[in-house]
Image 1 (cartoon, helix red, strand yellow):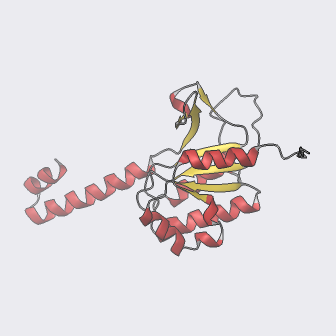
Image 2 (tube, helix red, strand yellow):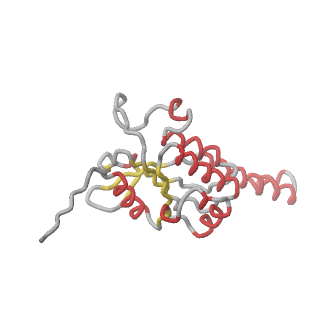
Amino acid sequence: MVTWVAVVILSVDLGLAVGVVFSMMTVVCRTQRVQCLALGLAEGTELYRPLEESHKLLKVPGLCILRYPTPLYFGTRGQFRRILEWHLGLGEGRKETPKLDGPPDAVAEPVRVVVLDCSGITFADAAGAREVVQLARRCRDAGIHLLLAQCNASVLGTLTQAGLLDRVTPEQLFVSVQDAAAHALERLEPTGPKTCTVWV
């Protein structure tokens, strides 16, 4: 509609140019307004759904599962960084944003393992990939174990070229959120002294 109006008012060439610019601005604005979703386990299943959809979803203390459902490029890397800082308690981002879930006086357990669901990241450029690498470094420095799940081949290739495997090991990459969550639950289990029974 914008292109048609511009062609009628201006000319064919200028109208098409206005349409292209308007389309690009629309895409950028839409990606800037996307929210990162915290996921919880649907009771009785192995499915992880956004916590905001239902109060019956289970959330494991110390485990944070996040889905970022938009391409990660130079225009969204700042938003990506601020959102992850808030969820993980890194930097000053968490102090400036009120708590979204739970009672206001609840004390949340510090995040020990984070699973980043990359299924919604259909594209990543070099700037966005460097942001993920920096996130991996900051998580390691903060004692948070980072797991990546459902990265498509293109995104994983870009992340690898940016040096992701210098910060994480291949064992931290998973094909599904369920596999990553199962690994995280094993890591969060109490590590007390184990007893061994020997049958003679």
